[in-house]
Image (cartoon, rainbow, N blue to C red):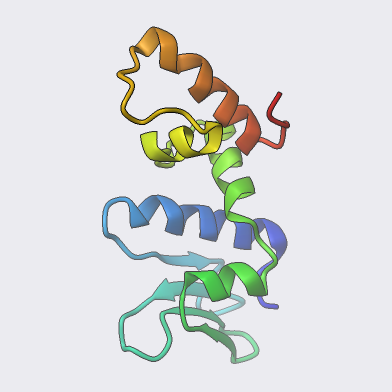
Length: 131
């Protein structure tokens, strides 16, 4: 693997955030002329996520973000939880929370009645168990 676990984690977290605004990642670790590692997404229809290391002319190509996630043994839920903890703002949908707790979707929740569910859901994302 070209990236270390920390680099892969942050690249994947950035891709998750960029998905929310229909953007693609392009990042360079180091210097291209020396030991640079370039990670980018393209839309050539063959390889969507590419990782290239320039000092040894090595590359990895993944068909999609999920393949990248699996190759580096990342976990989307853990990545999203860590982004919440670090202050990034991944999208957590109302529907995800409703489904997780098995709540009645037809009920109208106020911020006061829904906030405890959001807080518990974020704890769950961070690795805590549902009580």
